[in-house]
Length: 454
Ligand code: DMJ
Image (cartoon, rainbow, N blue to C red; front, side, top):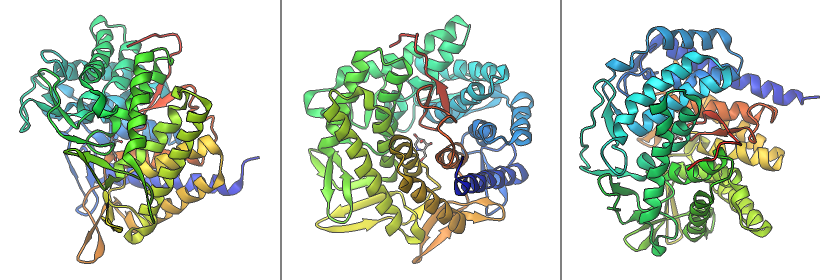
C-alpha cells in the first residue's frame, strides 16, 4: 500500500505543473518562456517554443492528457523550424531535441521523432567543417557564424551533445541522421586526446573548435563545464556499459573531483574550482548535479570500496547543497557560494533550478532514506511560498536586502525541477533507471543494451 502522505505530495507537485503550464498557455503560448510578472512571453531561444518542447514528457508522465495533447497539437501545427534564427546548439539540443525525444520515448508518438529528425538535421550544420562543433547556428539557413569568443567554445557546449544525438541516430531510419551520434562521440574523444596528466581528468572550460586546443586556465565542475562530466557517465550507460575508454575518462574525472573537493567547516564537502594553478573557493548551484552523476555512474567504480566512497561523496555533496538552501534567504539557494579564510558568503535568490532536487531524487532512489523525500518536500514548499504567483512561477533575486521576484519562468522548471519532484514522490517503476537514462535536462532516453557504440 502506498503511503497516503506521499500520494498527496505527488498530487501537490502535479497541481504546481498545472499552474506553471496553464500560466504559460494563457500568457506566453508559443513563446520560448513565460514572463510571469508582465504576463507575456519572451523568445529567449529564438522562438522555437522551448517551454512546449521542454514540458511535453513531464505532462505525459503526470497524466495531464489534455494539456499534453494541446502541446502536441502546437508541435504538429505551429513548430516551424525553417523560420527559427540563430540558436545555441547546446541549449537547443538539450532542451529542444531532448524534449522531442523524451516525448517520443514516453508516448511512442512518431510525430515527435519526425520533428526530432528535422531538428537534429538542422543542428548538424554545427558538425560539418571543424574538429569540434560550432556553438551557435541558424536553424533557418543552416549556417554557423562565429561568436564574440571567436573560434572558442565552452566545454559543456562541445562535450555534452552525445546522449540526444546517439538516441536520434538509433531511432532514425535515415542514413545521414544515423551518422550524427558517432560524430558527437568523436567530439568527446577529441577532448580526451587533449587531456594531460596535470588536468587530472578535468578539462579546461574552453577550447578552439578549429583544432580542439584548450584556451582557458580554468577548470571547474560548475558552469560552463558541468554536463560534460555527467555525459561521460551517462553515455557509457546509454551504450550498454560496453565502451571502456569512455568509462576510463569518467573514472579519471571523478579522481579529479576528489582532488577538487575539500571539507569546509560549516559547509561540508565543497567542490572548488582551479584557476591559473590555484584552487578558488567558489561553488555554483550547478555543481549540485554531481550526486546524481555519481549515483548514476556507480558501476564504473573500480572496486567495491570505490563504489562506497562514491556513494559517500554523493551523500556529502548533497548535504552541502542543502546547507546552501538552509542558509539562503527564503530557504532557497542562489547561483554561487564563496568561501575564504573561514568566511562563507552566499549569493541569495533562486533561479528555479533543479540540481539540488535532482540530487535528492537520485539519493532517494539509491538509499531509500525517507529523509531525502522530506528535504524535497521542504524545498517544494519554499518554492510555493516564495516563487508562486497567480500568473506562474517567478525566479528570485536578492536586491535592496530582500528577495524580489524576477520576470522569468525558465523552461527547465517544467522539464526538470517539477519532474524530479514528481519522480521523488512516485514509485521506482516510473522511469526505472535500468531502462532509461535522464539527460541533463531530465528527458528520458532509453538505454539500448545491444547497441555497441563510441
Ligand atoms: C539546465 O538547462 C540543464 O540542466 C543544464 O545542463 C544546466 N542547468 C540548467 C538548469 O539549471
